[in-house]
Image (cartoon, rainbow, N blue to C red; front, side):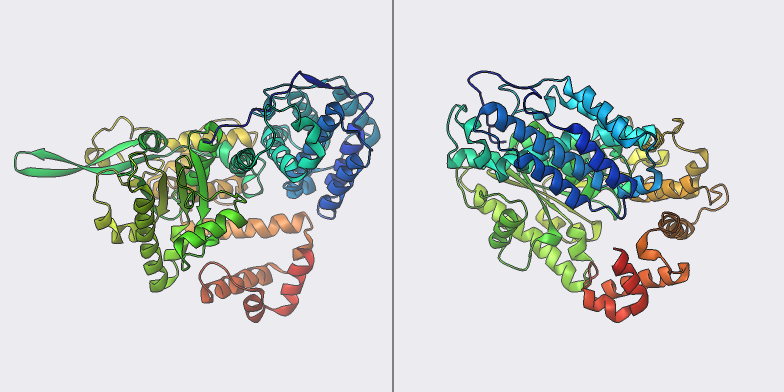
Length: 563
């Protein structure tokens, strides 16, 4: 990763709450009013009002005052962003136990006693700010007073530091003119190079924030629940005149890290193969966040649905980097840039679009190989590397292009049958049933007693289902509802039907505006019509016009009015 900018101040700057006293009481009152009526609340307006009140204070160009503005605006934006993600949780639980004014004053008083200190380590590790821990604890107290269960409050508050880091980067870049007096105390002024460093810092924080968002409207995140996968490559052993094929198993993250450290220009591509729901996209996001955190290598993750793959390859990459990653630096255009890893996620979506889509996906992989070779030509150390995820059917079509051992990696499920161990070089790694760890986390984050994988879900007919990350999560949701007897019902279609019913019931019980006056039958029919519109389009999305042509206008209007 490009060197992290060190904003070294000439001396430590202390930000006291006096005389510039930040009214935390008013902030939490505003949050409480929005949370208690979550679905009707105008979160964006409340956040804007809070931020505007900070900007209107007539601050002077002193480090103390501008530093105070930087931190408090970042805190305010972060807490509103995090809270907005959980309108469904607020709507389900929120009823303030205490008098709002009194409770928010108590929170404010507890925070006022803390001195905010900014030293030379702040910009390299802003989450370590001495104020963050008491602030997150105050946030948890606020959530609990809103009747949010303790386990949900803990999960939400644990994600706050990363939201603060991201908001801080956004605030610094978006309003850097406000902080010129801080810049004067930096070792060197902002040149084009240091501006690019700031962009990388913002992008890195965005990658890390991506994996701490609430997962499927839960209080916990992908990072909380993710189980780092095992994988294997095909290897061969010679026994006399016989050549036997075996599978070499390993921890995927560790194997890729070894590959990245070598940066071999002749071996700069890895392809991850796995079925639908096997965790390819989750791994791509988690691995990108990990690399962004340890700054091991410049990393850009590119969801292929945002890339115009039929355009010129370099133009498509350039457009994505500028419009979506918001980076002014393109690794395909700068020869002396440090090594960069491009992670391409979503090859499945290209392949799902019929014969043309499959050909597009195959041609895309081949085009990536050509461009990687072109950019690394003449360099011993790879300047550009690529990690690509795709389904087995697509990968099989390009296997002849990747004959070097280890280039194609196959994801392993959470659990492997013992009778399959003989196909691998070692069975020690395979004996671990990762479903147990997943269920331990799921129970912990749902405030339940940690007992591991439920016995009813360990039956042979469900092993194939629960061994796949996405299907395992869907089964867990259905199991939590308690409407299916899993000792008898072991049909995945039954699980899907139960989950759909759960979505409708949850929306109805919480009086979500979008389904007011809509029967369950109309709800299901509308979803079926939308699915049909998507299928008739490109298999992934449909235009509003296409949906309107398929759906009942009256029902669709109700959905739109409540959205």
